Image 1 (tube, rainbow, N blue to C red):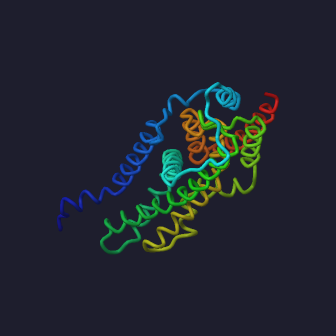
Image 2 (image 1 turned 90 degrees about the vertical axis):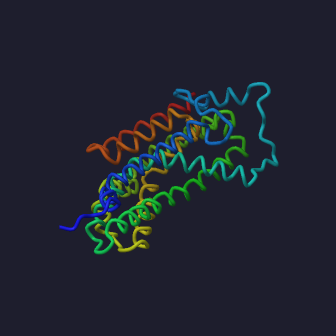
Image 3 (image 1 turned 120 degrees about the horizontal axis):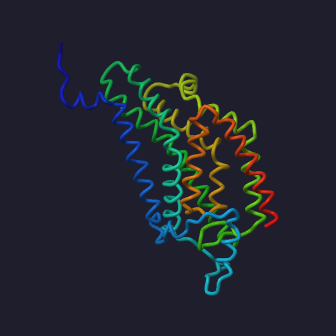
Length: 281
C-alpha cells in the first residue's frame, strides 16, 4: 500500500480545510464591520433597538450642529471604494454562512468527479465556486452603495446613523420587503438556495470555468432570494449591528431550517404590518 505524503494527508481533509477557510472569512468580515468598516465611525454607537428607527434618524438630523448634505455633494473614488467594501463585507458576513452547505456539497461532488490530482483540483474548484458566489454579492454591493449615495444626496438618509429619516420611505421599504417575501419569485429563488443538491445536478459544468459559472448562478439566486431583506438595512441603519445580526439569522433560518419557507411567509406578513404601522408614526 502506497503511503501518501504529509501534504497529501493534509489536503485530503478537504472538507475541514474549506470549512475553516469559510469560518476565517466570516470572522474577518465581522471584525471589519465591528471596527467601523474603516469609515472612522463606531458601529456600536450606531446600534440601537427601535421599533421606528426613522424617528431617531429624524431627531438626529434635527439636532443643532448636525451637517446638512450640500447640493453639490460628491464622493471621491476613495469614498466609493470604502462604501462598496463596507457593503461587501456585510454581505460576506451575512450571506456566506447560509451558502456554506452548497459550497461544501460542491466540494464533495468535485472530489468524486475529479480523476487526476484530485485533492488540489477539488480545492481549486471549490474556491472558484465560492469566489463566483461572492462576486455576485460584490455586484450587489456596488448597487447598494449607489442607492445609499442617492438617498444621502437627496437628504433622505441621516448621515449620523446611516438610516432613513422619512416615515414614508421607511414604510415603503418595509412593505415592499414584506410583499416580496410572499412573492412567487422569492419562493422560486429560495427553492434553489434550500436545495443545493438539485441545483448542482441541474446546472453542473466541469472545470474551473464551470465552477465559476455555478458560483455566479448560485449567487444570483441568493440575491434574488434576499435582496429585499437587505434593503431593510436602510430602515434600521446600514451599520446597525442589531439589524445586521437579526437579518443574518433570518436568512440562515429561511435557507436551512425545515420550516424556513413558512418563516419567510410569516416575516412577509410581519413586515407589511410593520410598514403600515410605521405610517402612523
